[in-house]
Image (cartoon, rainbow over all chains, first blue to last red; front, side, top):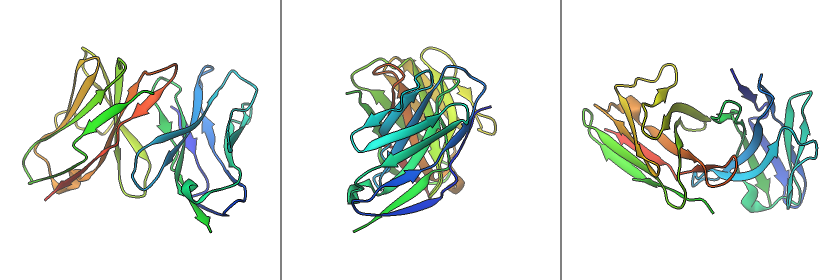
Length: 112
Length: 115
């Protein structure tokens, strides 16, 4: 069974500052992808960033980057220069076994 | 980019009636679609996986006779909540596999309220 754990139910960051959201996962698969999704109040799931497990290089997408530690099964998300529009629920997920398994989510609040 | 259209966005129904939710992939073929349920302030819980032309695979604890899933074409999957009860009130989200390598595209969700 796949499990994804997000240990931070809520996080807060000052606008323009940097914040890191934590995620650990467990899988017996060797080939998988990891994702971070953002869910704003509209509840539309938006892909933030994706990491292929076989790639050692950490994925980056503009202000968003990940720290992927495969041996430790850790996949944290760093948001730089935080903006008010970044406020949302963030879900870490793993697609081992074709379906997506989600963590419990982290609510990010951005203070102006 | 890949788009998944989910309708209706909101529905209120009376207890005992059935409600159908549609999930369409607009610009790609989705061989696999997923249905999730999300309670307030909680994560997405997978209900079932549907593959075009075959029976859906339900997660443990999900009543297949209550939540009927049909994936009749490569672009359409439907979830029918039968004999709805107030405890079925929730936010339902579909997701389609496709639209790019290892892409999962989500619908905008359906808020179901059973009164």
